[in-house]
Image (cartoon, rainbow, N blue to C red):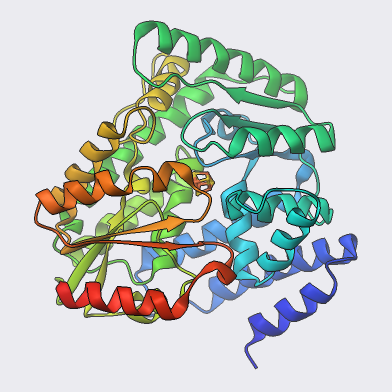
Length: 416
Ligand code: SF4
């Protein structure tokens, strides 16, 4: 019997008992963290072994210390919480972990039974379901942005009201202008004051500069990694490419993340050259989809070249004026504003990552992803690369048509 599935079965039976269920989740994360710390998977490069421990620890610590945590989304300017020693819990990670525990179906059903639309993205529905069942303890603060994800604002507003917790929503303009930067900078300063009030501590501006400095050093390593990644086979499974969202977004600016990219750079230099075909993913890497697992994980015939979301901002953040730097970073994100920006990023990554084909996994309910599909396909066609888009659900496995996906994936792989 698979111990994860056994645990998941017991957890599922206890979901109606919030105290017990949330203790079981804390326990499950603690055991998972201990397990990956002791039993390191030898097939996995050292950097990813380290990342495995780090990502689990981040979620575990945020859940264990709700009084010192803030709920955020993937694109939130978490440099502020890092500088103030606050644990960030990002909604997308929580929902992915619950899918890893095989309880996403119950959480999604719970959210829908409370009137949440079934067309809402399952990252949101899973998180909302956990809240409806009271298996996640409320944090001290919430923050999100208006950019990219149209589900964020209603989800966070609903949760802030439900728990009577302060929420800050950063309104990010679509296009870059001096006025736009000043507008976002002003909001970030206000947000910092609200964090100070909620957590009853001062933001040390020098500490924030230090975080931004570490962030810039980290991105320099990330850019170097891209110089090698196009020839090498270094990412062993889809999970690790997804785990990199922790390091490319919410946790960037932490010394542990800098260390991860130092290790990753060493690993990519020493990694074997690619021996098979490689695929670049757009938007999400479907790590819970059975066919993709079978074909991509630990394969020497098919390589995961990378995916665009991990590189949506590759510039520098102003260290002297970190509020201005963070504002610029938000506005200049490749997924913010017109689709042309995203296309430029994808073209740049194709050039660096040298894939043989592109797959876009169109996650159910994600309008920003689906809306760009045929434009991205045209780009791939222009560059002579096979393109596949598959409709599915990253979190809620029930929405994946395995038979149909297999047929389409295999036809695509034959083209490579
Ligand atoms: S998949 Fe799309 S809708 Fe869902 S959280 Fe991400 S950006 Fe938002």
